Length: 147
Image (tube, rainbow, N blue to C red):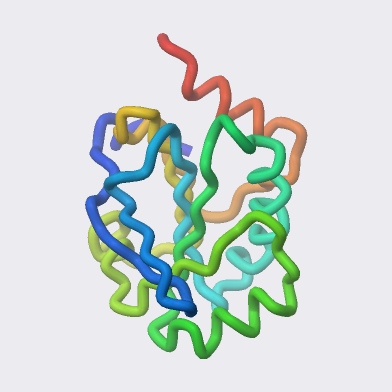
């Protein structure tokens, strides 16, 4: 967990889901917990149900956005989401891995970044984290409190 990139702006990129719905990341309102993941990444797969539950816990306070870095996009993500039965996460796709290129040039996944309501990075978690722990929601909420 690091704050070394604090202040970095939320990337102004657009993503689509398998149905063609568009997410304009730079235009999202309020705080965002952005997770980069892939179906081939074991730790990422383990985090997804935890992030789905966390999204419910933070509903109305922080939007949890997961963006797949699978180059085969919907071909892999659609069945993955169907099997997972996620209630709150949406299957955003980044088959060109634009987010990875911008946020983690070394390609390390999972990567989860908290952005405040003004779109500035607050906290970054590189690698696996137990988003299902009682401390996870507290970590996010505390990180967003004014200093």
